[in-house]
Length: 204
Image: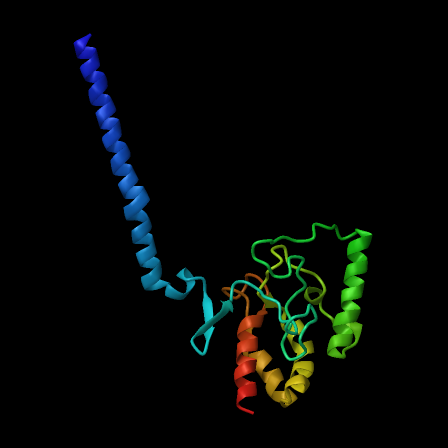
């Protein structure tokens, strides 16, 4: 009986030491090592890919945001606009509309959005790209297609009193190609583009 109790005690003590060792290694050492590597090798990404203007954080280039007239839900003509968002670009409430392509409500929403985008940018409805009237799966997509950025260029230039050619060039300078040359689609990051637009406007 005493021998059995002693064996059980040793097993329990061994298990407790193993639990303590694994807790230290996986709960403290490993996270610190990974965090250290992330901060040293990928500092910007590890901190959320935050962008700053005049030393102040203005957002993450990984999370889209609205560019409305202050205090309203109306898009500001001075800025390049993102894709539609069912969450109003609230990262705490993400997700698509979940409406199917054949749903009459979605069809009507897209039709209305297409007219609004065309009128807002003074272009024919035929020039409005799909991403200008449909939200992404996350509802906080930070990027738009080059086509959507291009149809906004003249409107943005006029609203800011800038030469159209300069704003159009700004768009082209911010087009990012496919990852590794074949994955995904060419895109334009709206936050980065609007920061560059702000800098351009400040020079005039």
